[in-house]
Length: 289
Image (cartoon, rainbow, N blue to C red; front, side, top):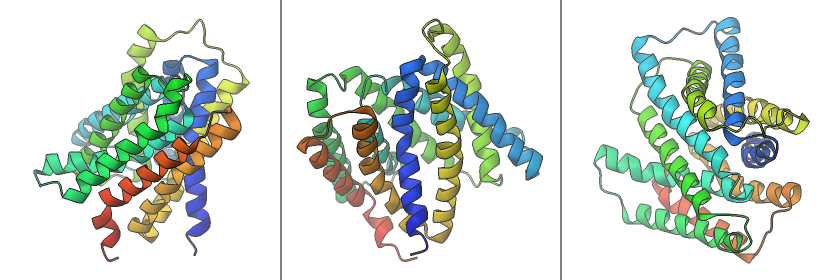
């Protein structure tokens, strides 16, 4: 019961990232928005991690690992996400994020060279089918495009690879140190592409832009992650169940705030994704605490 309010708050805040990003790209180029977020959030987290909490600096080996992790988790994934969100609805953005555990299951099996169980394959298939079902009507009325969905897919594969890579090592650094450095490094790695391909002339640093940046940094990157760590410390298996609520919150935000359409396809597709998520992580949910 003590995890109920934190769990609901986590799902509500985490799912708001897609809508906040959607508002941001209405004012500025996606790459400009992403880089601004990273180059503000990274130093802020590091100031707290090293200046207040006196966390240790990464050593040379840890910096190498952080750089590859940052490339996959921040530069490619979040860079792709912010590019895609201009071409797909915020609801689909939230729904795609929820499918990450399915990709992680498949990629970790390949990485660890273990056979993929039938229900894991079934979970991946049903989850992807759910995304297609939810997306189908949006393709008809220009709320989603095929290139946007492909960019989103590439980003999901990248963040799943990042997660599998991260779990290979026994990290001795505090979470805030890891997050701060990987966000800052990821921002620096994205910077050349932003200068080359970002459209600064059509970017307006107005109230909507800075409101989006603020929301993505404080409620999404800082508050929701701290709640997540709290939930994981209470019960890692039960914590993962709160991810199932993210698509529901995501479609609610997209409908209310952005006037994006909801249909029977939306609800059916979301239900299929949730079934796929359960099947793909069935072993985790059956594991005793």
